[in-house]
Image: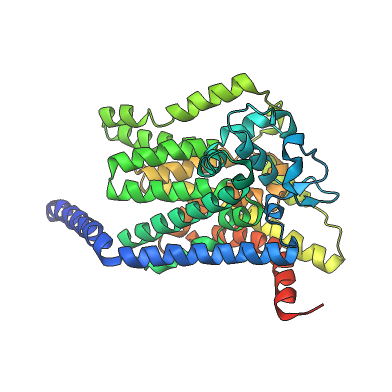
Length: 410
């Protein structure tokens, strides 16, 4: 017993020394490869967008915002030659498209947006697009697409650096292109790619203990999506558990810009009523499994899609269990704390959230990715694969149209 106890501090010191060496060597050893990986990821993402615009939207880039005919187009945007999906409610990108044209709620676009409080809280990507375009209406759509791709670069860059610190091949970060938040945001211009990228920045900067860069990442993350408020909560919880009270007080300030922005938005808009009665832990999961969506296709195709829906829901349940296990193995580390907070946030979500083919994957991509990076790869990567498969299936019709266009098939 005495010998075992005496060797444990030595083992811990060796592990810490190995960790420090990896952090020192990673930047010099693979910075160029990380940059190349991120650039290739951006080029591949832009190529998909260019092809789907060419062969699915007749060359009209506003098709990426998925604007549905059931939503009225405000007079301010009528001159934009928008691509309108007939007999469709559209998707979230159509709301952020309007937010980008009126980020300070001065042009009266709020009434045309579903739940404007929720949409305006997620201001980072739309505001960055507005700023990049210097407020010029005719340039905002293009700048929105450009900023989204910049976040793709940042997310891949941070993930590749994080992999290098963990002793993994940085080139594996190219797979960031295939995660649900990336796939959906490239195809439908939602804000989830920006949020997921900043979550990768959080994990990387926590690992290398870069204090001020981490603070900046947290500030931006909180402005990207309200679920990212869990990041400073996780980091401050870790600091408090380790009795680092001064640092915890400092990082507790990271959400302040977002909270001030939320207050401003709350004063200028009205919030849709929240159906609190629907937020019952596990009830949404059970309903999604017991009552899967019936699609208007043949029995074979409907069966394939429903099977993917069920697999994605089971994958999210598995992710919740694995998040609990990861946290129990290292309860003081910020990333496992963030994982368990994401898992707890998922429990009460209603069935409508899980029945949307893209919602679960794009919102909880950070949790799925960080679990997949643990060893051994299975079972930790299984939830990401199960949830991603449903998103890939959703992209199949657009992909087939691209293939037909490229090879001249009618």
